Length: 368
Image (tube, rainbow, N blue to C red; front, side, top):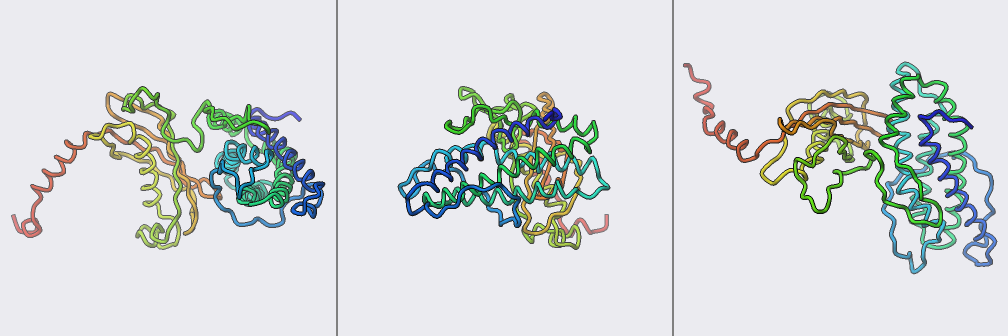
């Protein structure tokens, strides 16, 4: 089917996901036909059906390259987990953090269609299955879970291609589709060369990836301010604790993420993004921020904050960042933040002079 150029990168991911899903299902069927007791009771693969309930989500752990309990991972499972970590999980996050928030911004007054809510529900379901597959300890569990993951992924991809993506193509405005195309061009990481039977490559994406960290520095070059360049990006994850809520901070009375807390997280990610590029006697300080806190996040919610350096004026030591924050449901914050590079000793000397000349409490209240 003909796909709008804005969605082609995601559709390419779908093609590779279907290949891996088919290999998982083939592995499950082969194990079901095997006379081994651990897999003899496995039913043959059946057509995929949408999940009826979304299991609890656990964050994936890195792939353990060592055999589990002395048993090497089956190639289909090993290759799928490599694909998932390198491309599957980032693909889900692109849909959750770029595609769906862009739809909401394009249709601010309309309720989110059930089809798009289903994307989120199935993401949670598939993540839980992948986590279970990763933690499986033996061949019988691998085969059973490979079948469940394969069916769920196959059904999800086909449904998105046949229902969700056509809906987006029909309802997103031309400017929104253009913005989506541009953002995916910079953020999307193509799964070229990652297919069953091969190891996932670490070839860098053409633009900053969602999980990027301070950008690569040639091994012969020590990080320095001259290495800083627009496009450098990093992301951190935070959990909203009770002390982070507006009622606790004093900026409001509700048990939701406080705006001052969100601002502090945003500044932290920007500060830590450029810190490795500065010598020990230099640091950065915030000088300006324009923040929009777009949506509430409850206590216990997980917030991802992504900062990207968009401008660096080396002569003025001035850095400009675009910072975005997301919870599992939506885009919750956007900011433009300015920091400047300072010489720490000179900066602290100014602070020391202020402390030395500070009037005492009694003198400050005495009559002139």
